[in-house]
Amino acid sequence: MPRAPMKDMIKLLTLSVAIATALILPYGKAHAQTLETAVVAGGCFWCVESDFEQVEGVTQVVSGFAGGTVANPSYREVTSGGTGHLEVVEITYDPAVLSYERLLHLFLRSVDVTDAGGQFCDRGASYTTAIFVEDAAQRMVAEAAIATAQAELGQEVVTPIREAAPFYPAEAYHQDYYRSDDLIITRFGPRRKSVAYELYRTACGRDARLTELWGDAAPFVHH
Image (cartoon, rainbow, N blue to C red):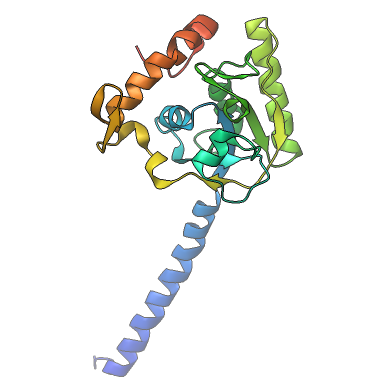
């Protein structure tokens, strides 16, 4: 049997590649589109980032600010007051692995939902808690999660549900603070950020208070 001309073979190969690409791309786009985001405020964003980066189904957590009136605020501006922003994290997750309901369940048990003045040793409006919702469906889930948490605690949950607001990432040095080996100067002398973070978390009383409040239901307590 005579072999097909080289020109025809090249055309056939090109067509095969085009078909394969057409089949792969829709899958890749569909898979990428399954990722969703949630924005929550839980006091120190280093801690919330540290907690949720260990949750299965979470692909990324970014520390930042939301809820205020100033565009692209700095950390100093937010903590000084006047911008209206809260320290928040933006959690990107795969809802096929982690539901929004489960995410909020974990979040509410990782903060002091009874404290309206801040979180643990961090006081002031920028350190208060909140759940930012994007639509009516998320609001319903958030309301149910808060009602469940309130029933379990037997205390009022003061964490508010707020409408979605622009999210502004914090400065680069705040991202993944809890696992950074960069050296900083602390009152105890030079320390790696990861070490300084653990010292801060313990001294601030976060885990002690969560254990007191939630007991074994607290999902991220450091022992």
